[in-house]
Image (tube, rainbow, N blue to C red; front, side, top):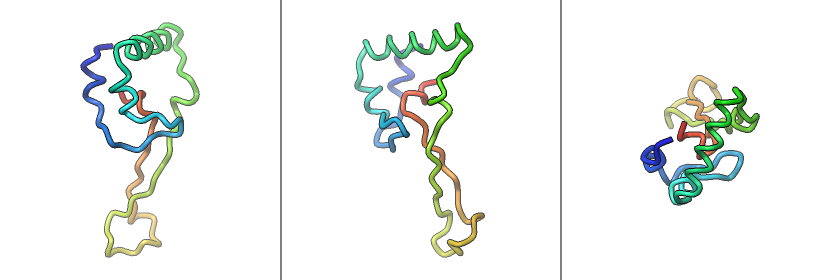
Length: 88
């Protein structure tokens, strides 16, 4: 994993179900980047992904303030995933 990708994560975003935000990864330093790299390499080697990596929080966002908020098609659905998974 190239550390330059970690620097591209957007800050000031919501945390996932694990409570980790992008800032934890961005400012975690070189040691954290190495451990994340080891984790992802182990996932590739063993063809296995932890169950928590497939979890997310779905947040409904109203598309138009003037529309009917009781209609489901008036919402855009946003999935919040854990912060360091976005590095993949």
